[in-house]
Image (cartoon, rainbow, N blue to C red; front, side, top):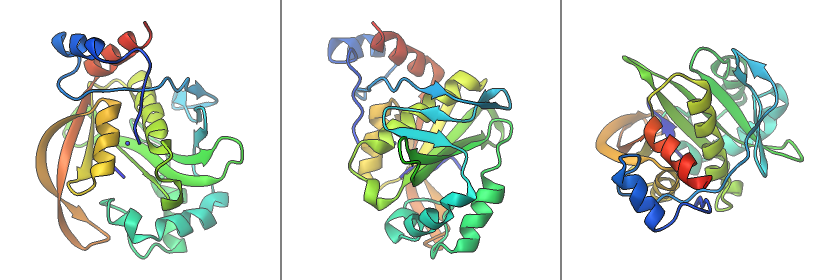
Length: 234
């Protein structure tokens, strides 16, 4: 899981080997190999002038609803999830879920929260979103989580890539940032495969653990994102 500043390997045909080196030489990418698949993200409806529903091969990213509450509480009430997210409480109760659905997920300028659901059954699987970073109006912080039952299937990367594409397409920003716990190697691989570059270490508060934890900061610039798309579509 990745916590937005306070995504499962992703492969895209056409961005391999020498092509990656060329991207790096042009300044669009640095050292991490990045392989991604095309999600064919399809906007369905709009609000604040940007898509509110995104569809990928296997997923639908949409606004959270109260019908998600039971699944939300079951999946979020898991230390394996909450310990990797800075702002998720543990235990996770129904009142936490209702507060998230009714208040924390309300969209606003440069702020969007999606439920990650199965494209065909609409079953709630997790959440993702972005929000502005204080004192940096040209930056967004991105985050995601999935219930443990959905790990290891490439779904985190699929959702993350859709969210990244949506943010850069819809928002007037220069960079997207993400933080990940230093011990969370799986999420590090996900965000590196999506194109994020390591920036520095730091400390961040964990609500579930009740203290500070060491984290890594990652960043993706708009130039990197544009380069990946340009090379991947050739």
